[in-house]
Length: 137
Image (cartoon, rainbow, N blue to C red; front, side, top):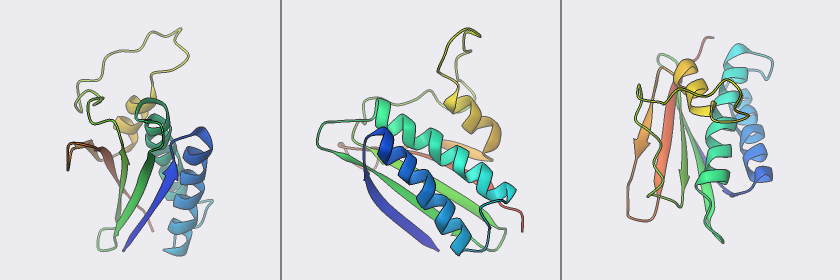
C-alpha cells in the first residue's frame, strides 16, 4: 500500500504531513492512539520538519511518501526535498549534540526509533531521507 502527498516546505506543511500520516495509518488499521501511530507521528514530524528547515528552496514543496508492507508489518517513510546538496550524516555517524543545544536531536531520534534509515538521491534536483519502522498489530 502506498500514499504520497506534496506539501509546502513550511512548518505548517510539516505539521500537516504528520496529520496525514496518522490518518493514513488509521485507514490501514493502526488507530491514532496506538504505539505504531505515535512512533510514525514522531518520525514523520522529524523528517518533514528537517525538509521544511534545511531542505527548503523558495517555491518548491516537499513530498511525503508512505509505503506499508503488510506481511511483517512495516512502514517506510520517505520525505523528499529540493536541496540535494544538503545531505545529513550517514546512519551511525551522527555527531554528538551539545546538551545545552535547543535543536539538533531530530535524526538521533529517527536513528533510535527506526529499524533503518538513510538518504537517497534519485535526480540532481532532490534528495530523499527515509526510514523504516516495524509496526505491531
